[in-house]
Each structure stands twice: as structure tokens, then as C-alpha cells.
Amino acid sequence: MLTLSPSATEAIDRLTVTYQVGPRGGFRLSLAGPPEQGCAVDVEAAPWPRGDDDVVAFDETQFFLSREAREGLNEKILDAREDYEGHYTFSIVNAGC
Image (cartoon, rainbow, N blue to C red; front, side):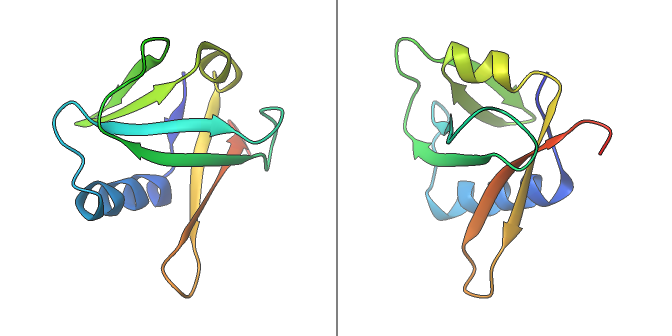
């Protein structure tokens, strides 16, 4: 199962407030390449899941993933880094690294 690093949890919490994601909303995760260490992950606020999305919940936040992304992110950690302008970059960290 996908887990979140503390920095990713903080980033998602801030983005939830910024984008006013409602109770049915969440964040769609898309892989920018093979799900390997350092792979970039696109995170997009979404008002609801698409028909083919798998919904994965962490606390009160929902993530919408394609089946391919969900399988590829199994046993991975979602990490986030904030730049000096307050923008976040999300990436994959292998469990145990």
C-alpha cells in the first residue's frame, strides 16, 4: 500500500485548504514515469473521482489513482518537497530508503 511521508502529509493538508477540496473531493495522482525511486508524481486537486479511479483514503483525504498507478505505487512512499516560492514537488521514495 502507498504511504505518505510527513512532508507529503503536510503538503496535502495545505493543498486541501488552498483548493477547498470538498467531502467528495481529493487529489488525483498520476505517475510521470515508471514507479521507481525519484519518479515524479503529478498531484491535481479534483472535486470527485473519475469512473475508472481507485479511491485510497488517508485519514480524511482521498486520493484518486488509476489502477495502473495504484499497482505501481504499492509498497512506495509519496514524498514532497517545498521550494522557496511555496510550490510542492511530489516524488516516489522506495520503502526502506
